[in-house]
Image 1: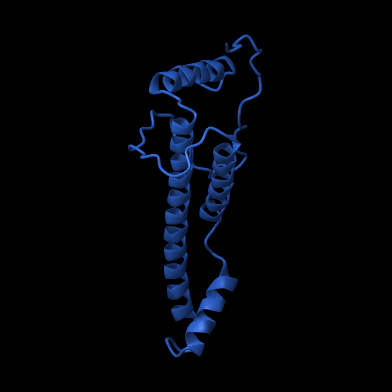
Image 2: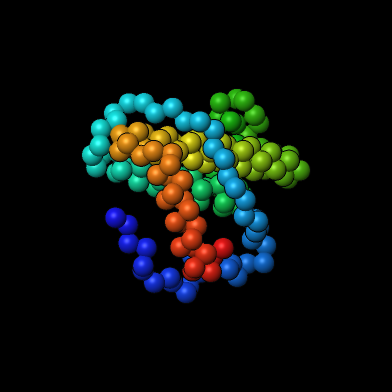
Length: 158
């Protein structure tokens, strides 16, 4: 039996950002593509811990994607390595460096976005595996999501 009588928190889940440039999104229903479970599907603690591990990797990928891609030290290292291998001249004028920097930032942001999406998919995969191993039905999950939404509504988050 589930105890839904606990008090609702009055504090928002995440306070508003002090940064006016932080992008804000409107809430929406999110649908996921079907996820096929596989591998070790035993009802024990290991799968729950695996989900936590994958979630931690998602946090790190998120931080990389969110940070500005202007890590000039990494660009300098890449340019130096390219110059040493003969792929690109070791000395570049400022216009070339600026153009390369812009492309580097864009491609780094793209790589970080793909990494973020891959880690997100890994989390979804572990959740699907956990659902099968723990014999969680779609009906049980729908009921749990309704309770979650109601708790968040009571807390003023929705």
